[in-house]
Length: 267
Image (cartoon, rainbow, N blue to C red; front, side, top):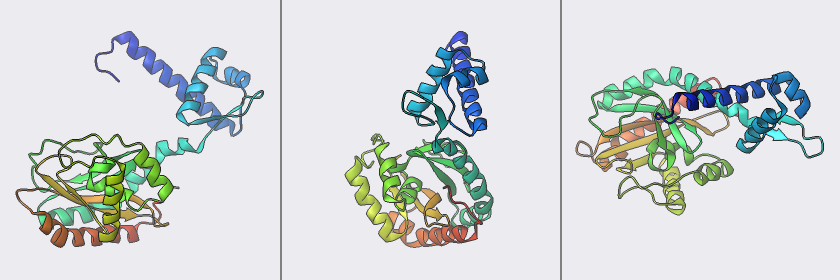
């Protein structure tokens, strides 16, 4: 929300959001497709308001509209995504915390855990071994594009092709430094290397002077449900040390978390 919105604009936005959530709640409780007139009665909104809200939710992919003339509405599976990232993040955090502390203590560097959300990764846990002094301050809840982060590339490399393609399709490929991946073809080539090595490297792609290595955490079906990374200033550690000394330990740690989780699949 724009911080410069006036009070009436904010109230209107909140009201629209509340009505949209109310409409979704009614559809969820109905457990069947519902027509416009019935939705109007169940929500207490006017028919034009219900039609406008339903149309917006259809466009966003959260509601499905049957073919005319019936035009009945029902929730689509995408609504589950609203809770999947949150639930997975909670479970992974509990399993990863001890391992993250061990990694941070062993290498004296900062360790981050993330999950995929759209074409970004969201930081769900972070263990700082020392102050970073970095330009891009990262904390729990921070987001980073998948294409220029070791966390994102570690997850993306092992996603099933249709899902990977959909995520890449949503990438804007903004250039943050001269080292940032410039487009889809370059990213696909990078992901091949990630799969060959078993880990992903971010070599100053988001911020000059910062390197990181990331490794995936897998669910029961062999699909990544998160990733761990260790980030370092480039003046302190070379890429060779990152790949040869830190990466193997990180990959082993991520694999142990993968094997220890009860069931963290998101589908």
